[in-house]
Image 1 (cartoon, helix red, strand yellow):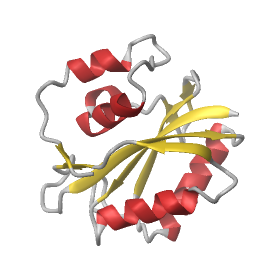
Image 2 (cartoon, rainbow, N blue to C red):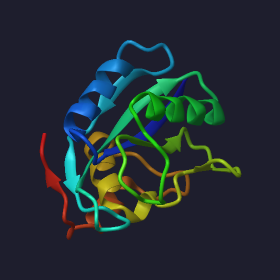
Image 3 (cartoon, helix red, strand yellow):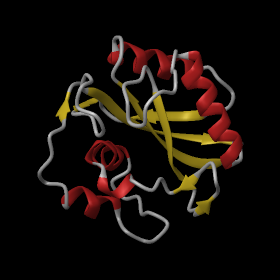
Length: 159
């Protein structure tokens, strides 16, 4: 089984309910198991500011899916939860990003692992550090150090 970390985000409809429904849905699916999720955090949009705030979290799971098969599965889930791909960094009902897949570093036209923005995004680093404070990225950087470098952030813990 591979160990994966996946970022969750939503800012359309009722984002908290959407993320809770997703986690309930995943708890009975065979593709991912041993799911453990961080708290939910409210954050300002990373892209265009003419959209609602986001609700973000990170979850850990184990899977037998290969990285690209997992990407396909996550995109299928986004569609099931009403995601329509529009403008880059625009509003969405659900966004799922594969952050880490074991210690794999992957550069593919459809997928980069670790996720290229992982270390710079407080809405990813803080929830990741919450559920995996001892984790190290494939390049050896400890998540706890990334978290410490983000002492200033605009996240609001909501659950």
